[in-house]
Amino acid sequence: MIRGGGGASARTALSEVSVSLSPPLPQRPAEAPFLGVGVGLRPRYTPEILERAADPALGIDFVEAISENFMVPGGRPRRVLAEVRRALPVLLHGVSLNVGSADPLDAGHLDALDELARRVEPAWISDHLCWTGTGGHSLHDLLPLPCTEEALRHVAGRVARVQERLGRRIALENVSTYAAFAHDTLAEWEFLVGVAEAADCGILLDVNNVFVSAHNHGFDPLRYLAAIPPERVFQIHLAGHSVEGELLIDTHDHPVRPEVWALYEAALRRIGPVSTLIEWDDRFPPLATLVAEAARARAILARVTRERNDRAGAAARGAAAASLAAHHLA
Image (cartoon, rainbow, N blue to C red; front, side, top):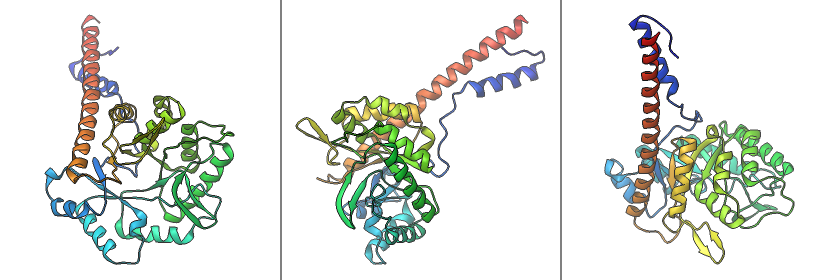
């Protein structure tokens, strides 16, 4: 209840009520400002993106480049990426950090990534919570880790060393999984959050991967989302998947499925506005198809934000009316 006499104090109190009743957005990582909705930078799309980068109708707010494609000493890939960077914000997303392996961290890989980051100045850097090789040999896949306390400590220590070498926090993406370890002691989301908190890194929340893994393992994807701390989410990925018998496979070669769109909306309602990327890595359609997917994500972002603001406004108006009534009755 607002207590007070003069109009000035009442106005001040009503202003304070309006502010306090607007539910605060979840805290966002300082290194990960909201960039909008982007697409993955792939060679077949790069010429059109560059040609139309100055056109607001392009419908792309940023791009995400695969780090390893540009970790080369000069040449055309670097020149093209520099041109893209002059036109749009760029993120670097790696596929072979191998942060979950028992092999020593690859110092040469980290040196090349650091050099690329210094040239490109990406908004942030990400990779995958997985292992990709052993004995110095790459298996060219994103392989799952055992969800145990021992593995958590092992990975978190390696992530901390990566961040120290790069001089910045990175974000780790949850991968899709198709098998589980018999000796797992943690849920997948507990493992992801545990690594992020122990290493003090960010999370790249792949909503399609959450849906795929939930289907394959029989858990509730909303329970997964409920465990994710909003203040650690740098970015969201959206992609299409394929059906292979009883399994869903994260193939990045279809439009985003309706169920994943629904899960994305649920994520935004809990986490708040997050930079969102549309991924497509096989059976490539025209760029216009990705732009249409980006527009759908942007529309969901706008609707969730608008509805939140409407609820906050209605709550503030109701509280203000009640406070005025109490003031006049006092």
